[in-house]
Length: 266
Image 1 (spheres, rainbow, N blue to C red):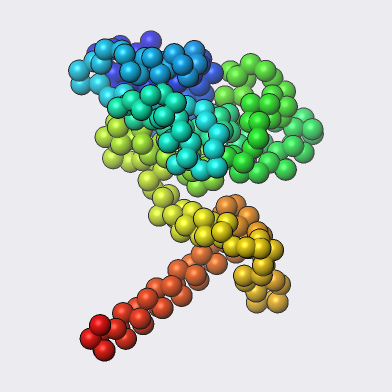
Image 2 (image 1 turned 135 degrees about the vertical axis):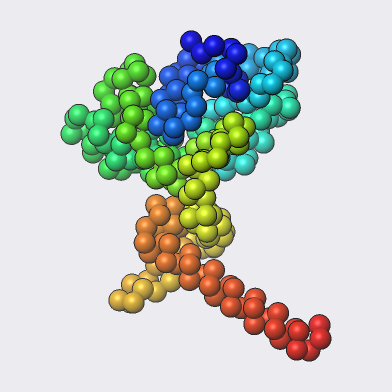
């Protein structure tokens, strides 16, 4: 048990499950676990009560992590804050649940699977936020219903890979790092590499119809908006190349436009 005199952050979570997972995750990210106390709330309603009515310790920062499913992490946080009564406390969301983060580094997950059935399931796993029932998937692939058995995924977890695949995990670790005033935040280190991917993913999701061809490779293969969106989200070389190309064209176009306007005195 962490000495309260060493505590710099109190983090409210929904249950003991999150306590077990996050303790492992923080160690994997090299966060100072001796300065973090994770408090299970036994549900969102109790969490709302604690956040809005509990006495706050001087010199200690507070945060909450909520399991919440929404189309985007931004929407999840917005809805979670409303549900919790719009507390002053910093609110983060695991989308759709904290167990989804177990699959953010898929290779680490595979190292903890000991059945052919589990490996076959993991080969079909989508991105963490798109897994419909992460807890059920964890039971199926790891073959154990006790969370202590599969929380060990985080023991050999590549945080940079994971945060590039999961926006909710990235926002959580980055936010906690800032609350702790950490100099080296894993999520922040990869943010510049994933920001282009996120922007382009949002733009591509707006293309209609989704089967419209938006790119043609050197060998003549047509790539639709739906296919490119998948490549971007997976962080594939083709997706990264496309993102870089689009941003370069946008930069050159805006530069040319600015120069033309300067010449005519606009």
